[in-house]
Image (cartoon, rainbow, N blue to C red; front, side):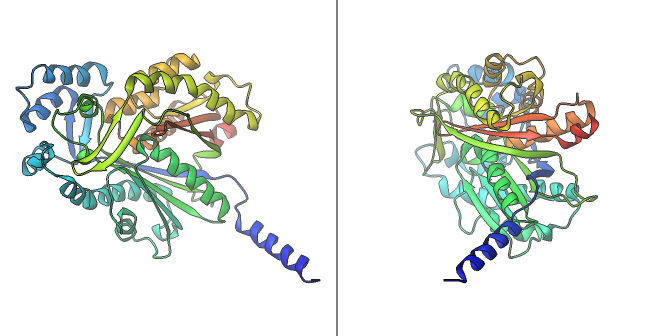
Length: 397
């Protein structure tokens, strides 16, 4: 019995030694898109041509109006091309099964696009890929084991001992969820360097105009991959922390399971978005989520306009409603709007693009704002919130 306190003390000391000293930080960001780019002005013609739906009364005009006037986008990128759709007529005919063919395309394309974004992040990071200790891969386009994480280990030359985690079907909140997990891993494993790779392909959702929500999906979503390297206790002068990840929270709004739904079916990835409920719901709940996240940090009296913002741009309407709900000045959500304009909604990877754009803007034209918030929205209905601190802004001040 006399040895128990000594053993307990040793275990506690070991546990403390296993943890990082400082907070998790964003050390590098990389993004990538497929080569196929379609402008919003061209998309309705492209879509109706490849789906043979020119004859559907009013559909092309409705899709064109969404693409050009209401989507907030100018162009989007896609892995699939006209040749891809022509080679797979089952993608536009709901009477035919198409899941296997879609997943076969995604199994190859998902890790390749993720590897492009990750390689860019690693290059900016400045350390070798073999220094990555943890890998988190998230996608809504895949259902294989071994999955994209295993293929990514090979493509990037990561160590076989890298600790891998796959996240599927988290919708637009996937990037935020992966970064939340990366923060915990980095802070609870000394010297950990966590690579987050979030990649989305719409080849799983491409279909003919046979569902009520087809217009929304076909007019707004695109393909892309974002990668982030997260770690604590930066190794200077090689590593340069961009954002400190101060706190995270996830809020599930009761009774909203129907607002965003996703499921793999024999026809691909299906689901629904109750946009009329989703938009005001996000705006109504966002202020309380922010207050709950900031109050424990002693920032409960902060003015919303004194923060920088990295918000998932689900649609222009969501951004408009959040702006009004928080009484934000014009330009506070400019990073979100720019990413939406140039790439569309790339589901979970979009938030990583926004974070990268916010970092770029702060580097080039920053106003010295130290504290900020990153927010993602997904099925559930779920709101992910992360409080960020920009250490370089603190030094300048």
